[in-house]
Image (cartoon, rainbow over all chains, first blue to last red; front, side, top):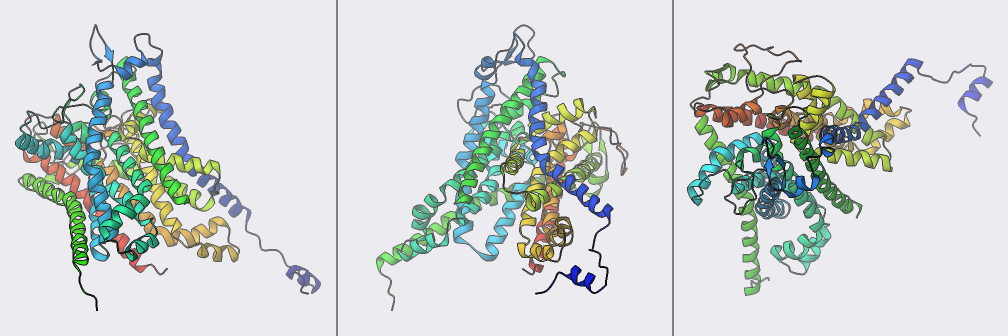
Length: 315
Length: 294
């Protein structure tokens, strides 16, 4: 039996002190850990802060007698600066946001998922690395540059090839948004396909399936929740995008009837009018209320995407 | 010996077809973009020169260069990352090294994800309400950079966490076993081994902060501000400033009669600097990854 070191040392006549660190080092470390903890919870503070401050500025309008929430959500009349007949209805903008985002997804989802499938199943090594870098660079293009492309390049192409009277419309915004959200769909989609176990692929190949069949019958069904999350994140980006749609969709407040109609989205409406609305006026408060609406919409979409991704990881 | 039956031949044909179709889908996203960028450069060519970078806008922004906007963007990016990088890295350290898997930390994760999904215009509203009015910073570089900082924070947290998580657990255990405390382990083992990933994540946010327009539009960026040519410190922190992204928006939508190539050149400068920064980060990441020993 060996006795503990200190006991033996005492028995041998040595006075051994346990190694201790100076008090300031211990306290300093404690302080640093408190700081780390504070930074850790900062994300919660900021999310709540965003909701609080945006809602705070919007709040007075809810008590205003001239304003009704149902008119805000279900009227397409938007006359914020009219002297006699002020109307704050954002239905047309909601329709604008949904039409542009829907068109963008119709274009981006097949191409984005196709590219994700190509990246994860059909290529490897250098080609794959290069393509991933290119897609990463695509994702880095600032939204104002996308807007500029929509305004200058895309609108001319649209006028030239479709004969539409104006080139800034739902189609333009949809194409631009599609190009913007494709990188996120590709990278999340590729992760989702990577998460499908290799044994599924091997089983399919062993049965003599072509890779085409493998993609349709095995990979898409097995990875569908992850791919859905990828699409949802794309939708979240589309709904929240501001500058690109501000510049590319034209500025007409009405419910669109064809892809060649100009529209205004919720985000573009705030960006376009906030500068003109005097602080704490009704108009200003309604714009903040639109911000609350946007916050809640993207919150729900992102929450759904996150729950789906988490569900996959747990499996 | 394996012989090709018609069935096998058909399957091979299908295989090739599938490959080409998916390749086509990938290419059809990338090729138009390369063409568009080429077109932008071509239209911008008459204005593109070194003097375009250091000149100030002239004749009511219709001609001249982008110097004040370029400097303003650098101010905003440096200040916003000076806030979001330390907070983000420490938050990631907390989430990856200290936090246990309980409901509270799950809420933090959820908050990070949702912060990343908040639309940029809502960040702008928040910056206006919180920094410009409530904190009384007014329309200033400080308000704008704090708004940008909060916008870049969640992505820095996510990329740093990924870098920290890639350090094997055995490294930490070895350090704990020689009696190091949690923080000593983080300082001596975890951070040095993940610094490359952390830095890459931060550099990638440089370009994001430089490109954003909506969050700074109502918190501190102005259409125009008179600045001397080549002046390196034209702005005080409590003043408003110009920014490249805002400048591009202004030139292309608000100013009539701009010389044709000027907005294109502005777009190319913005796009070029963003892509340059990102390419640097990607090359750095590749280099450091190839040196990794585990």
